Length: 101
Image (tube, rainbow, N blue to C red):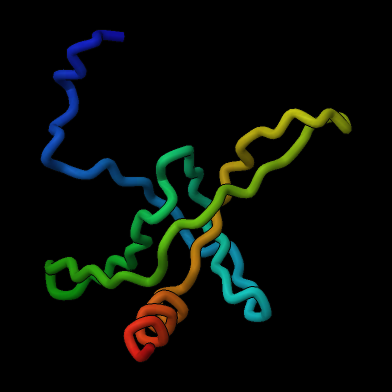
């Protein structure tokens, strides 16, 4: 791999595509079938709506974690390909609570 990384445009974000695989209403989290890696926490989860040839983007959450798994009872964690996000409602509620103090 070249150290130059000329194949990347640093002005554009790198995107991953996935779907909502599940949600936990008690923990207030969304599980996505998209892998994440170190440094991805805090990244926006966007929903794309396509209408009449236009794409509209809506922030639906913020990445917080990956879903790890282990193989053969080993303690070595691997990336399962799933990620965890906090719904945007929870993020906005936290921001609102913080600004009220």
